[in-house]
Image 1 (cartoon, rainbow, N blue to C red):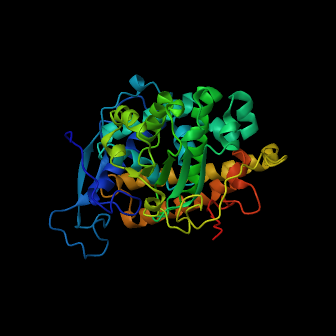
Image 2: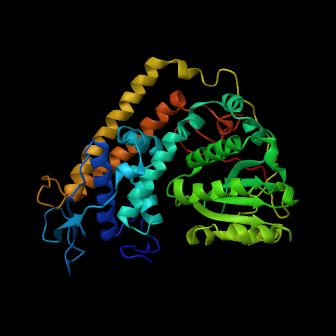
Image 3: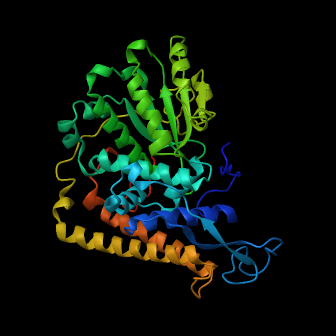
Length: 421
């Protein structure tokens, strides 16, 4: 482990579950990002002071570890990172847009924490990683996958809709830990049947759609690579490299478990190559299952499609095409702009309160206690979620999981799975 790296203790590192040290590092990450987003070209020499527990402080006192300016805290200066924004090449004028388009309806801290955990709480490395991810999102136009219908994407990327029509990959239900399950039927993949870019865009479509199905406090997804019937004709090394890059660099800490199911003998030569590409963290999340019964160790039988032995859910995947008029709200520009302004108003408040939170316990702190500031941040995060999902149908095209008599994705941002047992 490199100098400055910190392992995440079990049960910590998540929104509402931060250790005092983790909170200081999150403040530093926010301070750096907002410093850059505000158009400051110079380095932030010292991040505004942040409160950390004084040695031997009594946690039982009012205010816990953080009691504003009480004797329970000691103000310390946190050294700034040494990230070269120009070298990364991101357009700083678009940084705030990339940040909030990525946050969606999540608690804003959740996004930053994913990158901090992925880089073992090394803020310099975490900040570099998130800025590179933002650059990728801007340059690859990730918003296109959200704002265009499947038909529009198929017209631009040959074979995009084919992925859904054939059921090569789909999301259905949750595993035993409440994580949405993504099924990938590898035998259906033939590299020549679609443009490589179409497959990449479809992968991002699944990623971005799957994010909506991850319901707090769950933070990750479960992937099932069904290798039944796999042959070397199905192998696509370029796609595997792209998928690995997505999980390691662009969507860190979003993979809970990746199950490789019923891998045939011919796959093991392939696996030796792939294994060498994997980050140790991603590699540690891979599980092999030899038969259908072993799948029930990951997914409850009531949630597992009955195509697998032991599965009790009478579910068969079927693609529901784009419904004419489902995106007509895009035309209501007046309502869209009103809801957009409401959402932006709340996010500006959140940023302002976050800057106050960064200063809490330091020489430039406001009169409010850190506890009061954190309560307001939490309240604003909840308001942001409500405001975002009101805006969502005016900026995001409806997708497969919004359709049908029993849609999975609900208007308020929740997900409802239907099982036929």
